[in-house]
Image 1: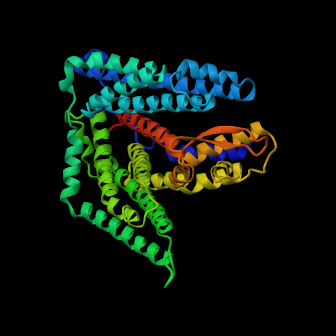
Image 2: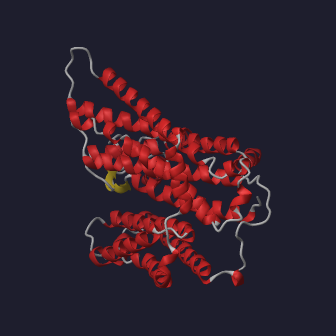
Image 3: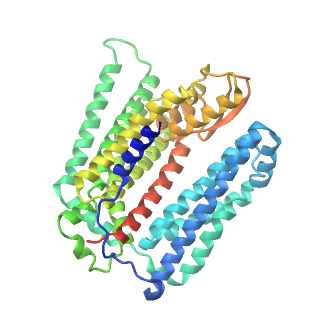
Length: 463
């Protein structure tokens, strides 16, 4: 066992280890030499970051309370609902799950804001205002008192920055990269190949599904085409996105332009976030260009607008997270090839390794209850519930399985966020979350952390 752990540690170290030599920092400026604006941005980023940490602690506290209540005293759920979601009249245990999701959502968005506010992004101001308004509405309408934990850092940063709103602007690196990408042949070639492959697979799926001279239920055909196109688009995104960001920083080193960038007024945060946004802008263009192919399913029926929006959200969040991994590896390696290999290793581990590991360990406990199948691996209700929740987390971290399970909950059970399932061991019911919720929360948080670490790495590296 010890030898296995040592090998696992060496594998993780080789995958995430930094092989770029340390040297003169890009813009590591002592606090006493910072301009008032630089101090303002750094202070605002720290407030957002610690606000996110506070919300994460609160979310973990809700989990601990729920575990205690589930195993000993169910009345704790009612007390938690009364304290944190008093005006939303649903089952007490479902309310606890929604409280956790709400707090985790605030933490994820605060982490994103902490990562990008130092880059002086204009959209952070509007996002902060919208998040404040959303939490205020949740507090007044639903009695969501944990909203105060998110509103406090948002209001504090708003008061700090209101006197210097001109500090925020459109990212110049993003504008330059997007213009360069769209003026070349490569950008249009990737879109053309992407749409050609998707069109080919869509036609192939249709021909395979329609028998010669047979009768086809159009609703079933529409749903199968939609899921098939969505699966193909997910696979293409998984293999295209890492290549778009893995060379974001390494190419500057390989072209010997990294040293020149350090002589400009561009900060490391502006550089990293700008590179990330330019790649994501192109990814969004890819996703939007494929909407007409997804919409073919509407000709046959069986697919709703909610399913299309949900699918786009999962695709977008998955692309953002994979792009963040590519950016992270680009910041800790010297060569584009090494960063690309590491990015694809993580992508394959998430899409192939994780579901196989979860299937062996949890025996598809979450999928069984969603499909109304019986779990026969235990007669202990606590063990069964714990296994279902652990499998729910593992399923949510895989974009392919998360999409399939979310679609099943929406279509078969008409539930978008939560639903109740029955335990086979004692017939009791427990609430579960739709996988797209956890996927969005986890992937956004991981993206923000990877961007923050990428910025920190560049502070320590030389040219």
